[in-house]
Image 1 (spheres, rainbow, N blue to C red):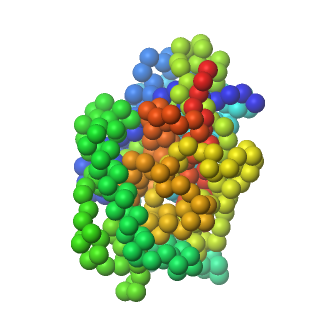
Image 2 (cartoon, rainbow, N blue to C red):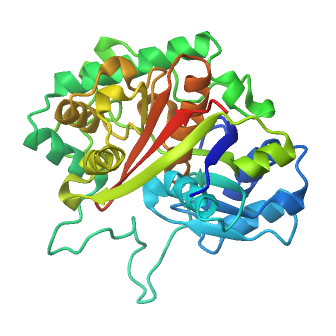
Length: 372
């Protein structure tokens, strides 16, 4: 198979729902990122755009976004809806295209505007749908917050453990923002804008937050992620395209895997995906230097970390979605963009990106720091 390299990686600032990006349509957010990824590249060299999206208007937002960005009309666009895993699924799909020789240059990532999520009304005239269905009622189709409560109950994760994890994520992101560690990964227009969820969080605030699922629950608005707006994408190339176009590889895509679990425990789904991926590559998790994992819920992160015996010092070293926010279809791509820049600024050689999605679908991808 052909080698696949990430040569550029950018994202927008992440805004909270009805926050600083509220008036930006998702295709415009994606177009902002595309402008930076394609600077100096002849459009005829781009074989395709693959973009994740979860709560948009439908249609083909990948095609819409590339046209919004002014890219060539000859470039095809493909949209993936894997819910929270969409952005990472898009990157893996593009990498597979290059591996098998179907193309040499792809833009892949995700975009989302929860602020502009359309209302969906069934044709039978009943009340608007509050969300999509992810599992038959005979199995169970809980809201993600309820599924996180299920994980906390099954694995004995206390409210105190969740709040402690959330506090660490907030602290890490706040320090990273103060040190300017997010600037290089953002598009130029957003470089000095802070991701809207970053803030200092006190122990008092953590303790007084009510449960969002039920009175006896442990999942709160502060130990779970916020609905958000944003876009992120990477530019992937074959080795031959890198040489032809004069790009230095940053990360090498090694492999990606998806796996499922009980929809009632949806946020646990990255665990089987990671195990499948590492088994296939004959690697142990302790050989991985950095992990960027979409933090939908602290309950999820504590349970999964315990199950995998994951070293906390390697996990989301600059915070995660609990702090930065969760623009569903973009989050998996944000993880990869974060991984590119975290690995570039450190001695890390092997990096892992993971995300869980509604319905119990998990996805993981493995990258090496390029040495060619």
